[in-house]
Image (cartoon, rainbow, N blue to C red; front, side, top):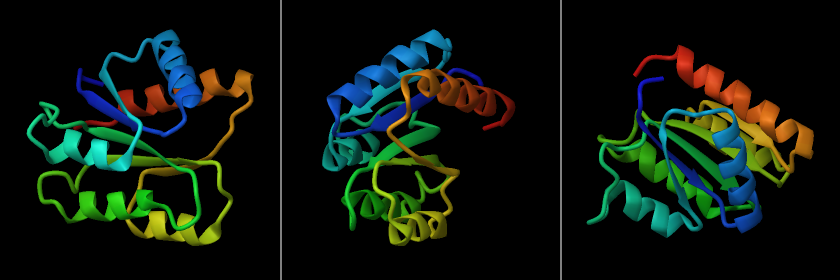
Length: 136
């Protein structure tokens, strides 16, 4: 994938650190940005300090039922400058309602966590391979 920005949103610091380590190991060529909250992520996408260029890929953790994460995805899909973002949902909640809501918002993938340690690297390797074959 051509160098671009990736935004990873997760309130769990351990998950973010694990993701950073794995993404470095698989040698992702994109600029990685992390947010620990949905409002901060929205500001990174639309606020005064907007990421430039806008991320092509957003990984968003939805950690509770009825999450604000679905609302963030809705806002992204309504914004003409952001609606084409590739959004991947990573969740620790096994809730069909959230899954259906996310899939109805045209996300690129829906994944369960926690990943076992040996699967984290495998997951991000597959994601990186996918990102490298698609065109933006």
